[in-house]
Image (cartoon, rainbow, N blue to C red):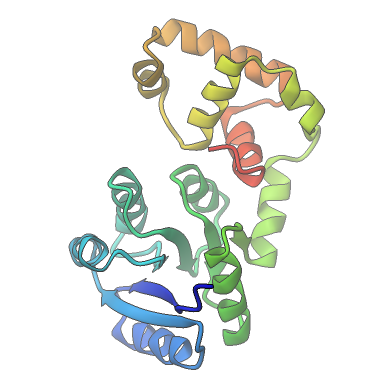
Length: 214
């Protein structure tokens, strides 16, 4: 049985906050910080060198750099599980991060014990969200909620398309991945939304991410 602590990379451009997170991790025997970074370049270098199990990433890493860093780490299959830790509870930020592949979205105003608890859950393979963020997502997907029964009505190709939507892929990227035309992808997207009773790609992305479809 592997009892090694979860290896964490902390990425935040505020030295004082990073120090606080490092002290917090030092209180947990099952979590250990293997590296810290203050900007996107340092984050990628640290992820390549240390191959962390979990990355704690600030969204506001100098403008939109946090989201870009998330996308870069995901494209390179780096950073392990990636959880955003930020002050922003903006609906657009939450959805953008989940679509880009974040495994969680936590707010910095959480109690330290809550942060540690959520990091453990994230390390186990589950998505973690601050309670208020769950409310934001509920608003985004308000209305009809697809079920497993609805999902069963999708063809294998439509499920592939839905997975692409959940990753935030463009129609062009989905088309290239599956060797089909953009026009065909557009038709599939239309069918997916209709079968699931959803109104937009964002709703489909959030629902798919919540149900582990990536």
